[in-house]
Length: 172
Image (cartoon, rainbow, N blue to C red):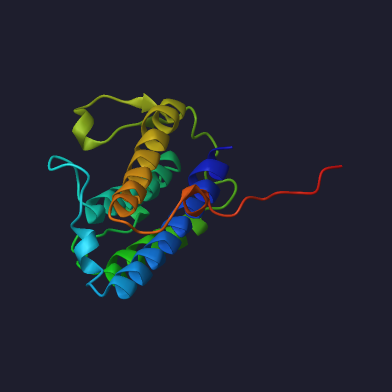
């Protein structure tokens, strides 16, 4: 189940975010303004910009997977220097690619593994606590806020763009 969330679902949401950014680029072209302007947009002066929301969503996904699989040293490092839509989209694509490299057994024992990070000052969470109470809510907060920033700026996106394609099957 951990892999289904951290790899499959996070990859899907990041891929949806790529498609949403394509819509933002198209919107900027239609309205004849530089799409890069959107990257500095924010919902409130004390919140992260669109760029920072996406950077944080990417970091949450990659470091969540890395810590849960005990492979933190292998996680890609991003310098947080993205200035263009192309650069932020490349970052998303690199995280999706990284997540795709986790095998089904990579998360064996993850629920019980003790997880820490520097900001926690020596405190730990179990892998299950880390996933449910930290990784999932943080990831979705930043993805949803990125969506909201673009929607607030007039980009013609809706819930279907956020959710992406669903694996519907014919009813029996």
